[in-house]
Image (cartoon, rainbow, N blue to C red):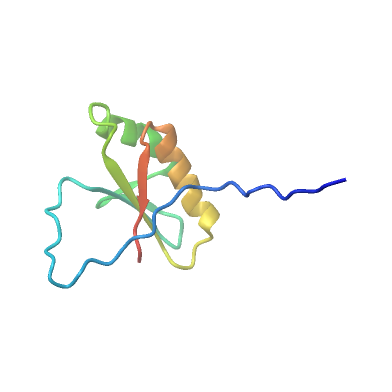
Length: 103
């Protein structure tokens, strides 16, 4: 009998890379940032949004441009499960490019 371990599956993520000091940052387009605070309140850029309405709000914002990136930033004291819930909502809204922002 032979037992082989299976590879774990998880969320695909790219680790943010630091830019060289002599390189200018690229110009920012209209970035969308979802911030999850310690008290589980959510902001979409500067607008407070209920978790229940986040998917509809994202669908409205990206109805003609689903290929854009949405950034998710969470308080350092949160469980990753709470951040993953927001990522799942963004993916459910049709966004395939979801990036994590360092705090």
